[in-house]
Length: 344
Image (tube, rainbow, N blue to C red; front, side, top):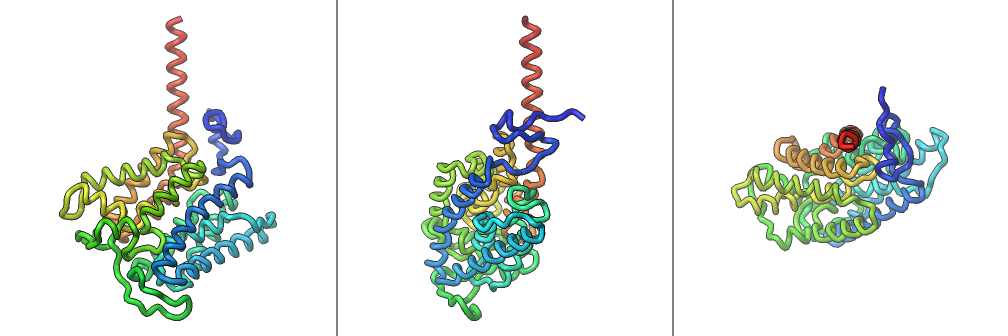
């Protein structure tokens, strides 16, 4: 069987053939941890905003989620007799992403269960950090969505203060994404929508904050600009031509992109360097495909949020996209070489 060209020759990554490919694209554990540190820094402002809107309970949700991920990751390393990396930040990233997608009112056992599923079922069985085929956070949230949909898709109103301990007594509402799914227009003005002052996932509604964090991740080269560009562009075009609410196409784009977790998915989930393709065009197409699937899941799926399912589907196609574009590039080079030789 003919072997494909090593990724390193085209993308400046370690030598590794596509027929024996491992998802890790980073040059060292130090660089991997640095990138994970950047993601943690980019999510801390979202946690701060969640605490501003809801009190100290979001902090406890995040702590429970991160603790479950870190504990499960450490136990798996001990069982497999791997070196225990206490400074590994990847479980923290997984726990924070899961927490940011949940409502601030969620019972603590749900982020714990989601975190355990992400590490024990999706991450560690494939070799741990840098080797997972699927995004652990997306899988963990998808697990919670399937098991407790009535809990994780109902949200408290912003500025409803909740105690860190004890039962939640505030009134819970469906989010704006649910209103769109029913064919209604959310009664939220543009200022509230941009500032995140509406019921939704505790860390995924702050559009302006997330936009600033995306600039930080792009400047640090932790995220590849092609992926969020492809994702948001395709999602916007889909919303423009297939508006599901009785309003103008531009308003359709406005509400679809800024309601729910679409922007959060584009910035923090699809850009995961381990599960994303390694080629430039592969990343752009990967992001566009994820944006299209996200909108299809939102329109026709059983839940108002569909980003986590879209990410998992695209993770499964990541390697194939790389193979297609590298093969196409080699074919173009070969044809070009033959034409040059023929002219001689």
